[in-house]
Length: 434
Image 1 (cartoon, helix red, strand yellow):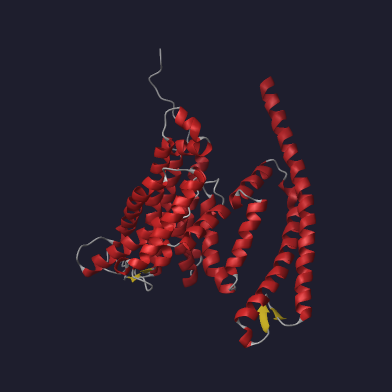
Image 2 (cartoon, helix red, strand yellow):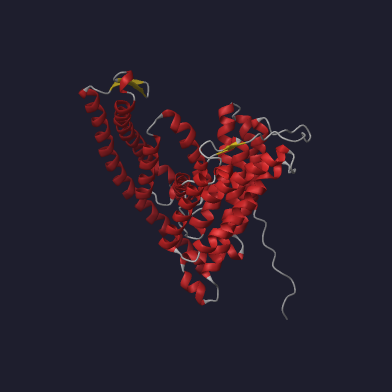
């Protein structure tokens, strides 16, 4: 007789701890970092986390390489800022706290419209179609200045309407907590999506679409629904960006923004759910902090991307997970010397290369202010041969030592992985004998 009771899933304590810590981090972050710059960085990181996670629904879960994802976050920003202006003029009223949903529904609408064409194909063809869609929308931004605002963009004032419980959303701290609330619930919703049948089937379409079709599912239909869901969350992120900045320009739908989403999602780690969160934080640091330090910041980001593709294609998240696995077997302490050698030699090579790059940029862009420039507390003379020779020597020495340290580390890492595999096999055999 079949049981009428359903099995109850065990309470996942670890998962609840992680989500509680995530919520506490969002709440406590502005209390730890109180400066206006820190608050601005945290706010930007909040909505970029949503956008990068939405992009990872396509890239990481569905294997869909999109070059036009900024279209849906950008159009969500435009619709959201127009809704804010209409509400401020009194033609209709919508609370500011619901404006991100306007962006989300806008992203959903355009994803349903454009995704119907894009998802008819997969692989390289899909990537080319999304690239074309992105260029199409960006070109339209110059043709319809009434909607896109031309080169100046569309501006607004987020502090409209009567305050509710004293909340006007004028101060940045109030906007941050609005972003934090949406960031938490959108992150939870997208994580829940990965556990749904559609989310599981999306993984299957990524890995083997022919087998999915063989068991009766339509891969194109799965891709299309995932595309719409990704567009919805991207639109919410775009709506939050409009509230935070109070200005939206055509740049937000451009190919550069789409490329940035791809680059930083990959750097964070597209194969893990939390990878895009790391990527969003890196994106904020690069766009705000690194761009203030150097005019060559895009070059550094590109070099970092190449380095990660060559040596850690799984992104930062994969490095963390692999080291957690080693640590769980108590073998991480044997690697600290190797990590130290890699860090020191990589830093030396990076400083040598950066010194030469900064001198090139100085000679090309700031030659009128003299040959000297400040770099890492040192004064470099960009027209002296000795300076170039010193920088080159530091770069080549650091690079050579890094390669030696890397080869030794690979041997040590492989040996530890073999030891871990042996321990696992021994444990399996022991349990089989019980």
